[in-house]
Image 1: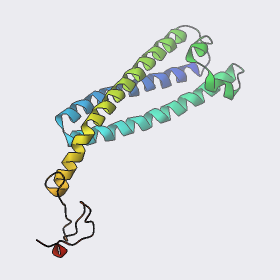
Image 2: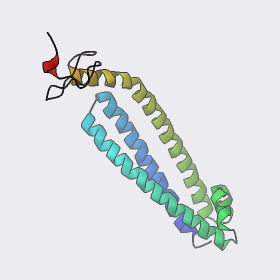
Image 3: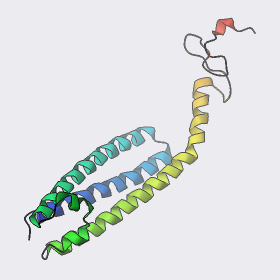
Length: 170
């Protein structure tokens, strides 16, 4: 077995673990959105961002390991970019081959579930967007469609931008 194989298995295991964390957070994000828990949602989004960055770094490390693994097999680096894990598994002896294929399957399943969760969350956000717009109108102006003013009396909507409250006639 190539000495880069354990590193590849470690990278794939880390990618599985990170994607499963992302999936768990996606479900928590859904719950927070439905509950309108803005503080929890903000916390979840921050945590998701950190995990996404960790996934990017782990994927870079995995790709570097793939290049080293390929070099040990006499393959040029550019060929390793397109190399599928099933092909790499053929270079490995047991039990590494079985572990690699099992991790590949878990990673594919985790990524598919994360993508489905993100698709559902996008649809939910799109459905909620008109309500957020209306809520912003209410917060800025008191009622939907009404005028809103800054603290110094400047109109900020309804075609009267820049007009001072004192300039208006009753």
